[in-house]
Length: 181
Image (tube, rainbow, N blue to C red; front, side, top):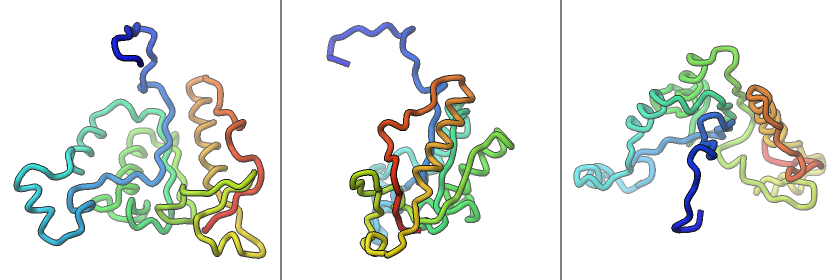
């Protein structure tokens, strides 16, 4: 929007009925982003820590109606966002999976694929996407990445549920995907 420009609110669609793909979601608290011992507690005491807190964010998500068209993609070696098998008290992936599975049952889309929290990071060279791990580029027989395939599969399914056009493959790589798994 340009400052001063008027927008017809009725013509704005918003995010209520938009598909969303959560990849390795991490809800951080002050203690997660400030690694110096005791400093997180000091910051919290002065009211300058991370806001909203993890508990506040979870409460907002729990009471929100914005997650009806959400898929979750997680990584089996993720030590930041966690994994589905981790405890929901510390694993945001497990927490989201538990919440969304309780809401949507069989309709909940989730897959945990090999990789760590940085798996979504990639370097595209032509039609090939490489993980930033140089060993996978130098491998004689690189293992194709699952990330892009699963992401497009989930987004296509979510678009199908609302009857809109599926995401276009025009901007997605069409060749080989190479990455650390």
